[in-house]
Image 1 (cartoon, helix red, strand yellow):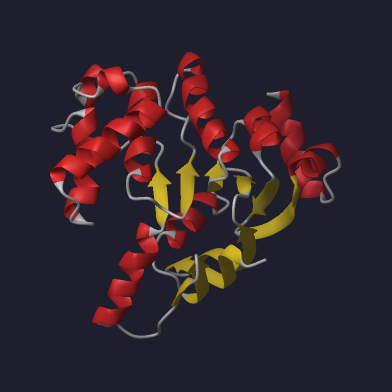
Image 2 (cartoon, helix red, strand yellow):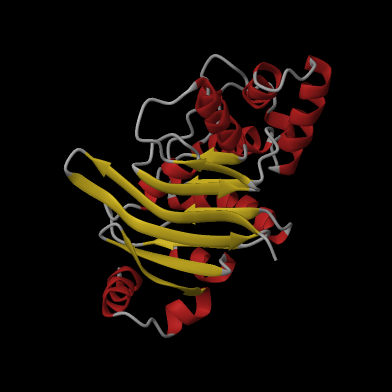
Length: 253
């Protein structure tokens, strides 16, 4: 079986501070992987490297057969084109929605396919309406972000990412800015995507969701992968003391 995501010897530093140390990950089509670990351990940086929002110091990232390798010198025009192609294969959903405030929900979902993929407006609108229906917001298509709840805004953000037809979806703590009563509506959409076979990587502190939805759980510790295994195994019989310590704290809180 060919892996959809392959990360090889990935290193990322900010000045003298090394944030990611020789990360190696292989993920297959339809797999839902959850990243857990204490704040500041490198989970978000890893996602941002995957979709080329952050440059990498060394290593190689491959998504759906397209590879990008760290370069010592300035990036060429061809390098930047490859970066954009790789970014398009990895849809990203952020903590704080990042919707365009001057566009309606429909406009937010339509924008990138029209600008980046040059899709005709009528086709972009049809696709956007179908995606808003998918995330349960068909009746809110004409609403602006300020008129939507946080949970609704995050579901629009998911629809917007899906509109680019990515090979994988990356979620960076998508419920951390939401009140408890709004989390479920976002988690339910993510659960449905996983059930449909979307390849996903999710950074979350929602341990119940992680245990139920994830095929695999990866525990990050100080920029390194300390544990990687089936979700139930990691939660029930973690192999490493740092994983056990982390889970004791978060499950007790």
